[in-house]
Each structure stands twice: as C-alpha cells, then as structure tokens.
Amino acid sequence: KEWLSKGHGEYREIRSERDFFQEVKESKNVVCHFYRDTTFRCQIMDKHLTVLAKKHIETKFLKLNAEKSPFLCERLRIKVIPTLALVKDGKTQDYVVGFTDLGNTDDFTTETLEWRLGCADIINYR
Image 1 (cartoon, rainbow, N blue to C red):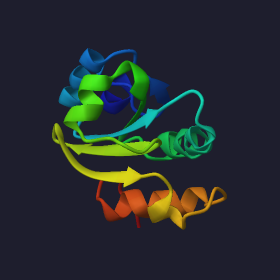
Image 2 (image 1 turned 90 degrees about the vertical axis):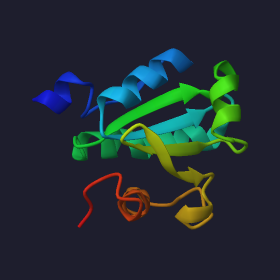
Image 3 (image 1 turned 45 degrees about the vertical axis):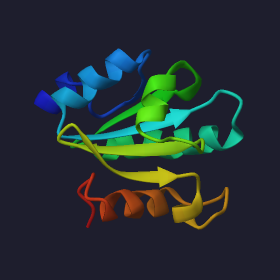
Image 4 (image 1 turned 180 degrees about the horizontal axis):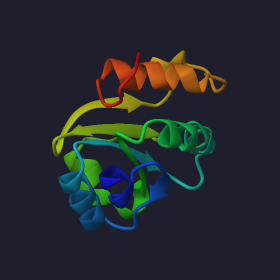
C-alpha cells in the first residue's frame, strides 16, 4: 500500500526536473525513461515499461521528456534517446542506453528488459 501511495505500480510521466528529484527521494528503486516525442524507439520502450510497472510494484517507473530537461540530461550525461536511468536510494547506479543491452533490435521482449533491470538489481527478478 505504501508503494502504491507513492506512485508505484503504474508507468507515468513527470513534468519537470524538480519532480524528478522529488520522486527519486521518496522511493528506493526508480526507473526513469528519458524520452523524446519524435523518437520511435521511445514508444517501443514505453510499451515494455507499462507492462513492467504493473508487475514490479517494488520499483517506481517514470518518464521524463529529455528536451524539457537539459540540466538533468547534462548532469546524468544522457546523450542517447531512449535512456533509462536506474536510480537506487537517490543515486543513479546504472543506465540502459538505447537498445544495445537488449539485443540491439527493435523487437526485443519485455522479458529481455526485465532481465536487464534485474541484473542492475533495480527490480526483484528471479
């Protein structure tokens, strides 16, 4: 219940860099998708993250428009879209950059992404 009250269990967009800092402060595990509206691969990532957010309520799943977050993108050194920032205890621990770790293909499975997030220990993956 505590996780759900903090926005876990759903994949949702946050509006600003300030929201990002607030969200990562209140949850132990956060996956944040830095996206751009015009990038097709971001829509592919959205589809998989929507599924995983419902399955892994121990982790908060967010998306943030990279074009509206220049400070954060520079600070986190985000150069490729899509990039997932994997945040544990308020610190960015790891990144999933593009689809390189996911088989370098547009038709990777949700399980492949789930496995990659599990490797980073950002979700409970067995």
